[in-house]
Structure formats: C-alpha cells, structure tokens
Length: 254
Image (cartoon, rainbow, N blue to C red; front, side):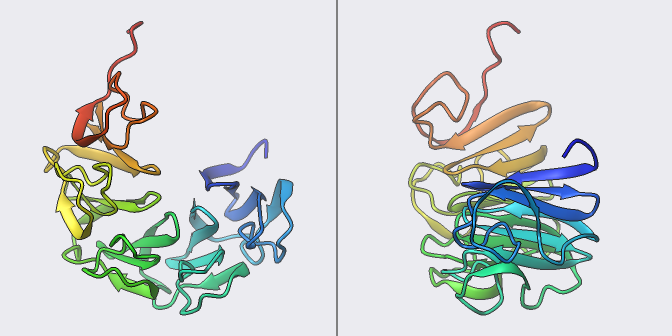
C-alpha cells in the first residue's frame, strides 16, 4: 500500500484501507472481519470480497467492518448482536447488505458491537444496545437499523465509540449510550438511551470523534475532551475522569 490509499480505519485487532475505491484489510479475523471469505488472520492486506470499486468510506469496529458503497451500506465480521444490520446474528466473512440502507446513506461509523449511519441528515443505528447506544429510547438489541430519537435532520457527522455514540448537529454535540465515566459530556454518569446535549458545546463544534470510553471535539481551533481519563486520554495533564468537556493542554514546548 504505497499509493492509491484514500482512507484508513482501525478496529480492535484489525485494520482496513480504502484503496482506489476498493477495500483491503489485515490483522485478526476470527469472525471474518477481513471480509475475504475466511476466518484466517492475515499479516498483510487482503482484498475484501466484491468490494473492488465504488466504495466511498470504511469504518472498522471492534470485530466487524462496514463500508459505504454508492449510498448503500455493507458490513462483515462478527454479528452476535446484529451489528451487521442484516436481520441476523450469524457472522459473515464477506460483505452483506444492511437492511433498508440501500441508497441514501452518507456516512458510517462502526462501534463496539453496534453500527450507526447518517442518512439524509438523520441517524440510524443497529446492533448491541445494553447501554442505549442505539439512541432509540430502548436497551434492546436491534438486528436492523432503528431511528435515533430526535435526530431526523440537520446531523452533519456521527461517531461510535466502544459504547458511547455522538453526533454533530447544527454545530453542536449530542451523545447517547454508556456514561459510566462521563462519556456523554452532560455532567452526569448516568447512561442515556436518547441523545443529550454535551455541556458547553451547543455550537461551534467542527468535528467530533469517540474513542473507547472518551470523546473529543475540535472547537474553534482548540480541542476539548470528556469521559474516562485513567491514562490521560483527555489530554488535560490529569488522570481524573471528567463528565464535561475539558480543554486539551498545549505541549510545554509550544
């Protein structure tokens, strides 16, 4: 992969790249997350079956992978909670079509054992939902996409972490799902099965990304993060969790 690479995405134990409109993956593949019709791991990139052109974006979750293909979404790998979105819980070592999302999808984000998509400004999610990460007011898993409560328009971007999920909505940040360490940024540590407003980030947010148990946002040139901080994930020269956004500190040489 010395040329032609357009995007990359790393899961828990595997990695994928968008190369000249096709997808290649490498790493661990016990559930078929490399998408080459095998469950054998590979220390070099392998071609994902049937995805040799037309792919617009890719996203690797913990043990599954998804691709945006001409407005449709296809996923492969582990499917124990329905994270492939094809109304099944059977693992698939090759891409399968996500139910209902065949032409209108604009973005995709694969999380822990669930997946979310942005379609026509609204957000739909599917898969594992024990902490409310599907955002539909429930904690029941879903094998097909369900509508995130209240996010039917004006959504600009989505990001799925291990269990928290966030969206950029009209320049503001909203999150839902697991919140044991303050991942939702609303000053609480209570899980929420519907989106909540991140404290202080109602506008001015440019991009947002969720990690395993923390979230960060680019705000007017600076970065703010919230959630778990046991290893310094929040970048504020502390190891204390924060349920609200804190400013990432500049390195001492700047």
